[in-house]
Amino acid sequence: MRRGIAIKLQSARQYVDFFLGLDMGDVRLLDFIHNERMALKQRLKYKDVDHKAIDCAISVLETLAGEIKNDGENIVIARHASN
Image (tube, rainbow, N blue to C red; front, top):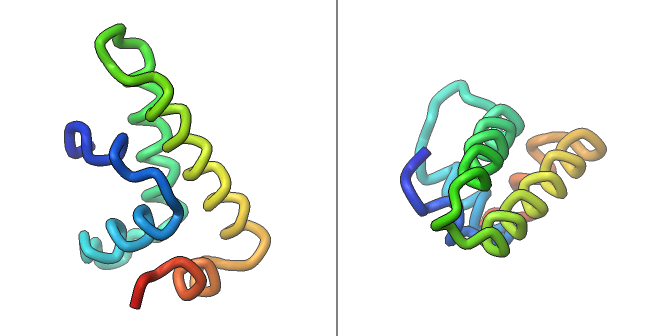
């Protein structure tokens, strides 16, 4: 994970835009979300991090994952992408 970037992302739109900007080829948004969530949960073990910001980011990621499971990845990207 890019150190500190994910903690600053606090909305679904920011996460989707960040994912699209990475241009990760065949990596699906849901896989990206799961990896980011796991990385953030690992960071919660450290005392010198902003736990509230990490919890907020994890919540956003879990909401996005639920939307993808219910509506599909393409619909979620279209819903939350800025362009």
